[in-house]
Image (cartoon, rainbow, N blue to C red; front, top):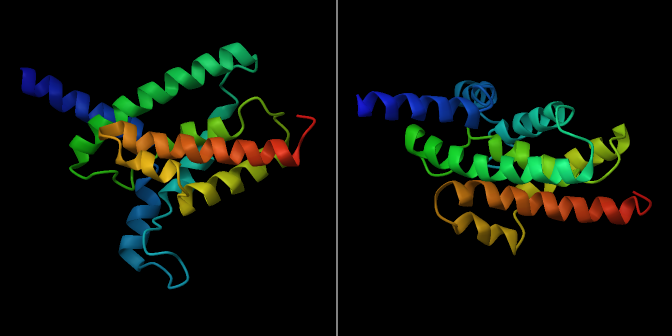
Length: 172
């Protein structure tokens, strides 16, 4: 009975961590047809899908700053736990299909900025850039154990992107 519950918990966490399996689409596609030579070796496309999902889900979050901060903080903690469980369920450290980290990372990117199309689109591009290049110091966050290592480097990339957006949009 306990094993059944653990298996169910693992499957639920994998569903949440993979954006209800949306991340499987690009990963499976590139595994099937191959990755174009011009793309980096570790690029599977799932992070792109996760960031798009984060943008789409942004409109479900509160707009008031205190409620937004509390919601995103809770989501980050939940994402850490879910990612750790999903790693065990998928049998891989920081599996590319785990995209919940990109979702919360994008929410950090656009935190406390106007929800205008230009800001959100540039935030998308900046977050994808910072998440891809993994600059120090947030690159070191990947070394944290379990789900914290999966999520916190994306939170770091989100903070870096948010700071750049604040420089570009000082009135925000």
